[in-house]
Length: 279
Image (cartoon, rainbow, N blue to C red; front, side, top):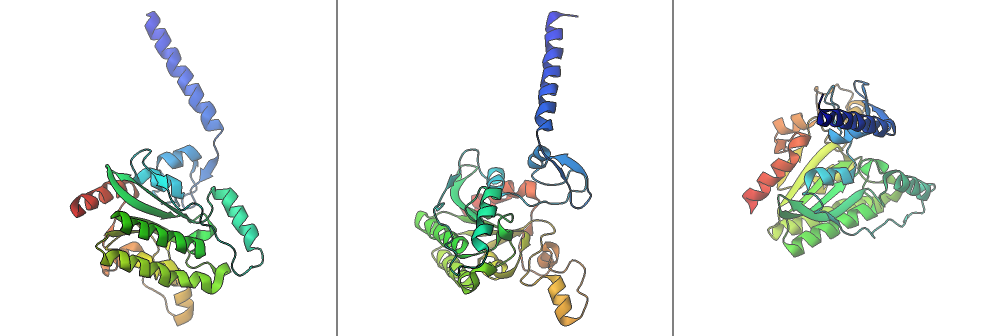
């Protein structure tokens, strides 16, 4: 055997050993649907889609931005906006601190600017890990600020939503964000701005009933629950069984409520095509 071949085989062996050690330091996560276990790095590499059953898992906001935007093009905006616990709700401050440590975010919404195929956009992402992506005063204010920034800079606006709705710990202050965000979006659109609303699982409550449903173009991930009140609540209220798949993205597409269902791995290309047509 040639000396080069020996070195080549040893290099391959060392690389495999390094990968094994690296994998050994990662957490193992199980798919909630099929229960298959994978290293956390594998989830990330596969955009949080189960390689076995293809179930969609929630995506952290910063990871979502990385999947969509050109590499190293994202710049965060309005990071200084945080909630002040307007109602002094019992235990709320502790929950905020817990979620901040868990997610590395100040609140549930990540706002900024970046590029898709070298086309500059304003982009926002709700992170469902932070109090179920609920919309409180800070989230509403950041959405409005991002929308006004896009209007001022003449940029397309893209928002990915994943939310349980309005944040109950902020009461009416939270509900006010529905009108506030919807007004900002409408003013942006009246000035000729393009708003692409991307709905992921779940997009519900006050978020679905406000800005998220006002997109010039509304895209959704497969199987996403999109509604105001969930099917279980409706069934208990009216005492009837709902149609199979009711309030899922496919049902809404069939009934003209959204424009297109896009596979997660195709979102970047789809958005790029829309931006190209718009420009």
